[in-house]
Length: 170
Figure (cartoon, rainbow, N blue to C red):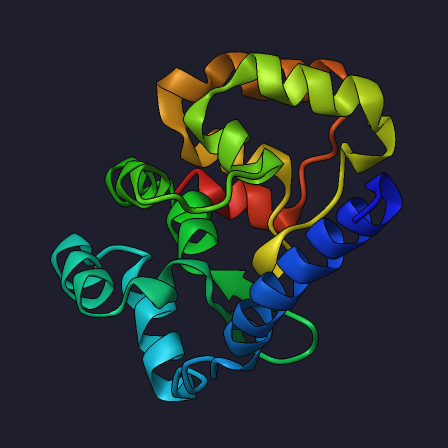
C-alpha cells in the first residue's frame, strides 16, 4: 500500500465508521412540542409566582426558552415576563438556569455597562419595544433604585417616556 492509498483508506475508512453514528444521531426524534396551555401558564406564572416557576421548570427544563404568543406579534418568554414586572427573584433564578439575557433585562437589573455598550453600537434601539410594547425605560423604572443609573442614562440619551412607562411607576 502506498502513501496515497493509506491516506485514502484512513480518511474514507474512518468516515465509514463515523457517518452511520452521525446519521443515527440526526434521525433521533425531537421531543413533541410543548402544549400551548403549558407554555402560556409558564410565561404567566413567571410574572410573579416563583414557587410555580420552579416547579414547572423542574418538571420540564425545555420550558426555559419557550415564548407565548399573546397575539398581534406580541411574543413573551418567562425571563421577559419577570423583567417587565421587575421580578428580580424570578429573573435571577431563570438566568441561573440559562435563560437568554437581553437588553430589556439588563435595564431592569441595572446593568449600565451592558446598556451603554448596546446603545453605543445600536443607538436606534433607544426607544425600541419589547414584549407588550414595554420600552427599556419601562424596564429601568421597574428595576427600582438598583436600576436608577440606567434610568438616568436612558433619559440623558433622549429616551421618550410613554404612557406605559408612566404606569410602570405604579
